[in-house]
Length: 333
Image 1: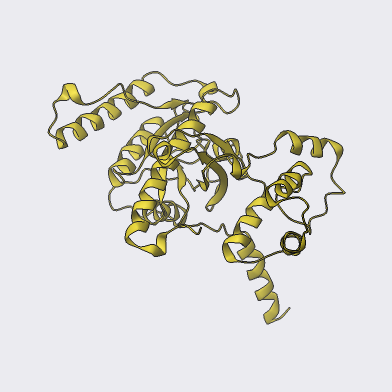
Image 2: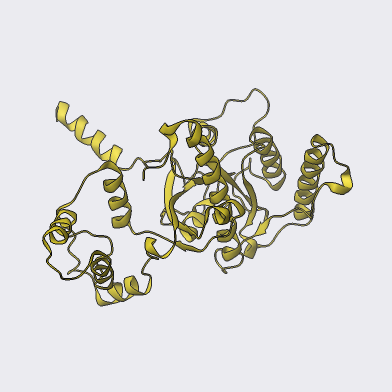
């Protein structure tokens, strides 16, 4: 024991703190405790948050990543995604090293080989050979000899899409957040709830609001009606964010009247937005849109993934516009 023991514990804690990049689009999952947010993050990104059947399993921000590919800036703007890849942990490490200008031994060796190569393989062919030999991440320090044959086969099957395949690619963030509770006016939120709201307020995020309308959210403050009231409050607080509503755990069923209540809320919001633009109620828009999801049965997962990619594209467009005004926000080239 001594002063250094405290430093060691601090180092261990800091290793578990997610590094959020302000120059990367993000989607934050918001909702009451125990509605299935962590399961969704696991299903659509590289994130591995703890999943349990009790409230407040998530006690901090958990980060997952996806690599999104587009054919053109126009496709980014309208949400036409060309491809999606879930990066491995080693690829995420390499991404950060490149961004920071740090080069590993393997990366330096490859540069030297290219520099002193005499009439052999050109750069593009060499890179293709590296990918075909499983060294796609460019690391030499990691030893894969201890991997099982099954794991190697699985890695080969799940080889990520190469960045060279498309003109535009972007590493994006999927954020799991602590659950929010419906609070009466004047009630104080706990630190975990404040963390969720701070992330929404200060990070470049779209919002996925997740609801469990089966009646089994598991907390006395997370009844179906409470979740719908909370949704209305959060939406009013962040009216301009890209947004998608998700009914999770559909395999458990939806209690009578809950889906109709959600539709009424969404229609009222559509009407309010139309009136703000000087339109009539008939011009309020299409039927309210939301996704019914069951991770357990695989229902709605592909639709949700596509919608998340569309929202990430919207956030990227906003970040590009901000970077045009303030170069400090620009993505590193």
